[in-house]
Image 1 (spheres, rainbow over the protein chains, first blue to last red):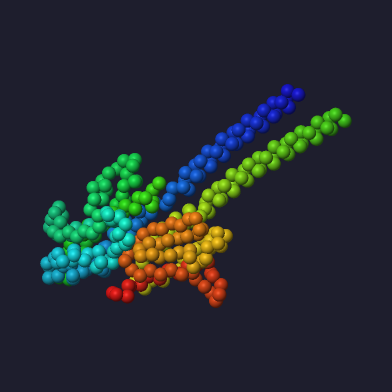
Image 2: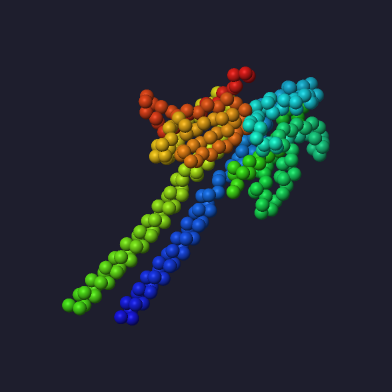
Length: 172
Length: 137
């Protein structure tokens, strides 16, 4: 009689343990699946590659950007449309969700850029260096460095910083 | 005679216990499967995948994307295949049910069109995305 009572008690405990485990699994799965995919890192890498391809197709700097060894600042005026970039298609953000900055260095002086280009929202640049628990809610940054030459054998070091925010769509 | 009855009782109790355990585990597995193929999750995944593909695409590219899971969900929820993916300005909108829908922007400033792939009159479960220059270029 006692043994049977003990068996029933074990069954109840078994179900309590099962319920706790199931509750834990359900909670973890719900948390995991309720967070959206964060694709900003890939997005910023694609942005960097696209800009690199635009300013330096096949490794030679665009002649509208540099010709006869002289930089052409007017490239900045239509930089985004020249590179077929649209950072705020609906105009819904007062501040765009993207930024891209390019620095061109002479091989003789890699400390100070000799020419710069940028497009998008500059406010995000400072957020790139922040590393704490909440930094995933800020921006994702990626940096691309490469050498490119102009059409007259001049070689330059190019640094591209691409930033994507889009936090609301990627982080919960 | 008494012993026989007791054995029968134990067997039924064990059987009920095992059945309850199985029911419990089945519910858990169904929950996990349902979570993994949820509408919002699919919409989020599709919209971002397509936006990233468009971002990295060059003019003239035609992409075929497998949306078979999405087609099945859309069919169950009464959404027309033609309405699953919409391109509005530089946004990809994926809609698999009347109540939901996820959009994601792309920065590649090109003309993008999306339509379901057909073989004769039959849908293949794939979507075709074309990327081309804008007509004013």
